[in-house]
Image (tube, rainbow, N blue to C red; front, side, top):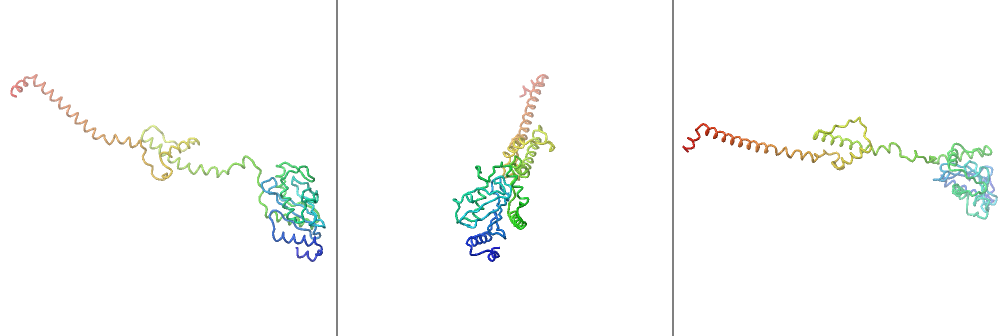
Length: 314
């Protein structure tokens, strides 16, 4: 476009040369935050669109506007007008900024259309302080306008101007990120899959080990019943059982066979000594029976008179 305009505009005019140089620079180094192009029939009038600044209520919005450059540009400042409702600046009204023609004392000839658009983006979330052409909408209203600004480009001016506005809007939409959703209690919660996943991963082995331990206790003591899988477990009971399992089976050996609980070893120790105790009891009983038999025999012999003969012969 810049090459075509070289033959159309008066290249002896320093302002024209300056503007065409700025256009060439912006086309060679485009930005995702803004886009601006001059009208074919008037190089001193530009159409532009800026993207709402991040982390503000304007984020994701696409705001169109119009820039008018003075004939003395760049030695005098341009004027700005917003065309897209935004809740910060009035539409189709020249806004009062330190970079606009409302404050020529602040303007620097070294500034450019690129500089002005960057400054306009920075001005969006600032306090209006009652400045000319400023609005002070609520945050929720500005967020709603940011979403609506993406639907279509504003309607303004002649068909040729509208074609340029639509072209700029299409480019900005291709580079614009999604509009962030308003904060809400539901959006602050983690996704369901993320919430359930940490709980499901440890729950399965913990529940399996718990059933194994309860089955072993049932076989050893005969006092506990195996819980049915149909009975729902509360979160508190799962935590408590998980702690018990952690004491019995360290996490590093969760998949290895669990060693027998200490109570099982203690129950088997008396059973290992039982055969020796039974033999000792049997010999004691036999000895006692022999002693009783001897006493009864002596008593019988004494009563029958055989005892005296036996005692005498001896």
